[in-house]
Image (cartoon, rainbow, N blue to C red; front, side):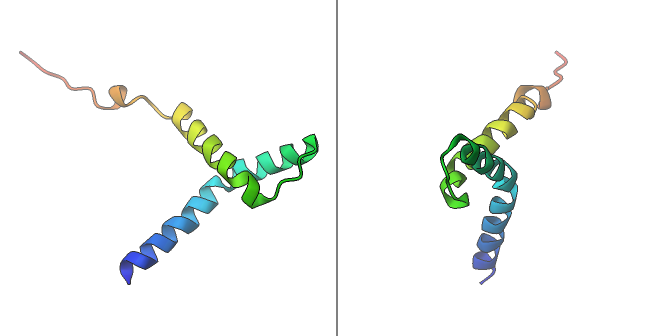
Length: 70
């Protein structure tokens, strides 16, 4: 039961975190002339969210710098 509840919470958080990019894409595509619903713009919104998260994060090599003294 806890696993199902956790999964539902993850889905809800996923929709909340991708909402801004999806909403802005939906508004932009509506102004261009493609009247797409939220669910139609969601896949592209997910890709934009992942792209923005990847470009604004620090490289992993800079986070885990090992200091060896030989």
